[in-house]
Image 1 (cartoon, rainbow, N blue to C red):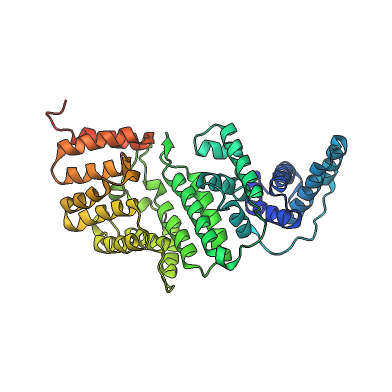
Image 2: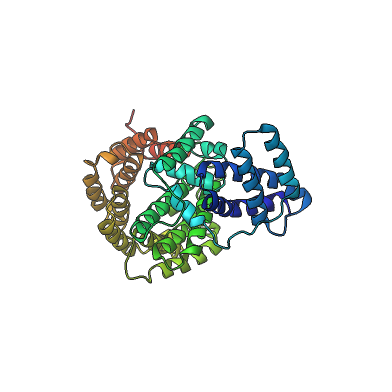
Length: 408
């Protein structure tokens, strides 16, 4: 097997191994360290010597022995037994149960902040290194290492035990899990800062984890909706930027460059997600993404349906970003002035004060309403408000296009 194939295999089974160890031994932090060491040993050994017959059992064996070594204080004994474990590890009996979802529940412990939940999930379940996570969120590696360490200690202090939460807590904890995966995907799809518009590795990792959750909860319509939303959105990735890396808005994208296989899968899942008795926010967002994907061109988009879906979403999950997106859809059906009027309801929302999305959408609608001076000013303010260099370049180009002749 190639190094790339080994890497993919290890990323898939590492959370299963970590789950097996934590279930058996407890000590989440020590188990996570032991699994990381076992994965490193496998990455070095398997490409040259071949993948063992039971790769999961091999990793459990090696990680378990590393964990025992960590408990022992004799450094010489630890080094000697670690070398023997790598050379002679035989697969232990490993439970058939896949504990990935339980591990996600632990990483999304309610005692943690959203940032810590995201970091711990990417580290323990996603298999990303601390350095990779730090690069993704544009913070120093030492800062991210401290954040992850604090998260582990907080879970331990809060009495986080390994096991599926009770029925009363399960739905709430699953909601947090889905929110964390959604945040990871969004950061990958549109990076909040830096020179690149998106981080495809983060988006793919969120999709991989969402597939894992969906495999264990195939009947959960919100899980299905989230996976559908990710696939339909990620399908546009190649058309979102020009050859120079500049942002290409949805209305101007070459839809022949959309990934048809992802769209077909996403459309099927979006349809399946609507089969439940209740509607959740991810199902509705998937339905909106499916409506866009179903249009052969921007001009053929069913904006009436998009607006209706946003109305429902706004009713069941009120959020200023939902209202902002509804304003865009409303402008397409009732004109830019109607969209601007709806946007004005967000001006008193502290969460949106100075937000580049509100500024940029208002600029777009002002431009369409025949107010180039207003559009110019808001595009410039939006460009200054975002930390994404790709978005800055796009907004500055729009400001330049809208700039009145009399503007200074």
